[in-house]
Length: 263
Image (cartoon, rainbow, N blue to C red; front, side, top):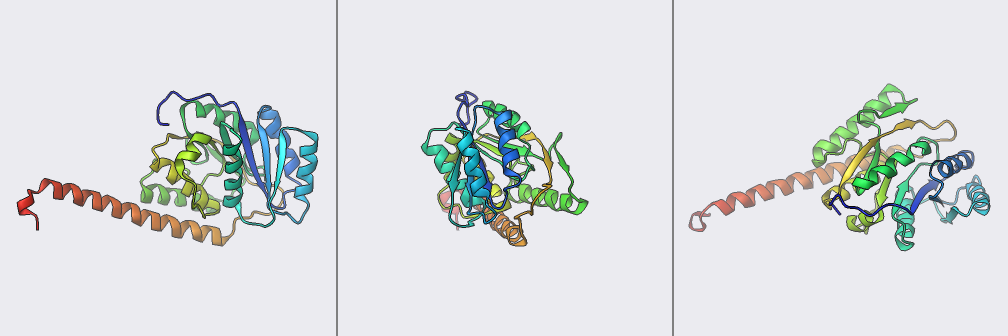
């Protein structure tokens, strides 16, 4: 997986989780279809009470490249994406894309993410790299996001600058190598979890600058519980990472000490 010779990406599944996004969904799907006409769009609706599922069904009825997975309960972003990954793996897609339904991820930038898969296993649409941009966020939210990513990068020892980013493209071979069994995290933590799994699996992860645009319609689903989960999990993973490093150093030191001189 880490060699530069990679199979071409031809079959792409764009996964769009939804919960109460009936106003945003038609425009996003239309823009994805215009930006990458060969891609299939899979809407993963968590039983939206506002009728998003019915809107998605109408889109699917009019376009064979669109389908809907009706999930019976609101289980969160992570569970929805895992269900989408399972479909992409089972049906032989070359790549699976994570994309929000609220318009914050610009479908027009999807070709850039897919092009980067020519030399990568995982491509992250990054805000906090040269060329990246965030529109319509207050200063305190930018500070919080940058700080969270710096904390994650330093504590986990990863080279990724925007591990919480949710606009991504994965080769399906990478998803297999990452070992998704047992992933329970949600929101920001889900994205960090998958990034960490990719890095630890020795996969090539690259960041492509994107423009992130805050939603204009609807309400964000990201609550304080999601933020707390991310902070708690990253801290735990970071402690485990540092302890692992210390054990490795200790083992190397013991190897250098003659057996007769060891305590």
